[in-house]
Length: 120
Image 1 (tube, rainbow, N blue to C red):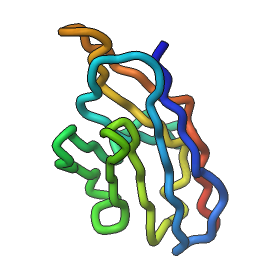
Image 2: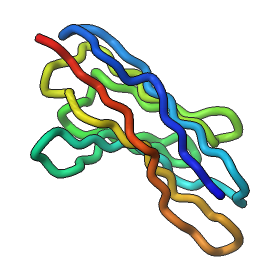
Image 3: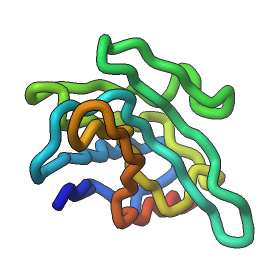
């Protein structure tokens, strides 16, 4: 069974930094795109950043220049370095992965979410 396990959330003051991690485990053929999404109370889940298997990244305008997504460990682990955090970054952050479980079947998986709270 494939799982995405996140870590690294917490409480930080405005202007501070946090680093989120997401590791995939289980049996699968390959992981394609991975990404981070977030959901604030009363709002819809929104894209934060995506990273392809080749390492190409895409960011939401609201986090450009402050957040950096990266990928390593045989491309099964991704990170989100979050700098210059603002109170509006407060949300539950979810990891997402597009996983080829066997050729050619691909399934999207979500992590359990990790809370990030930025105090003013």
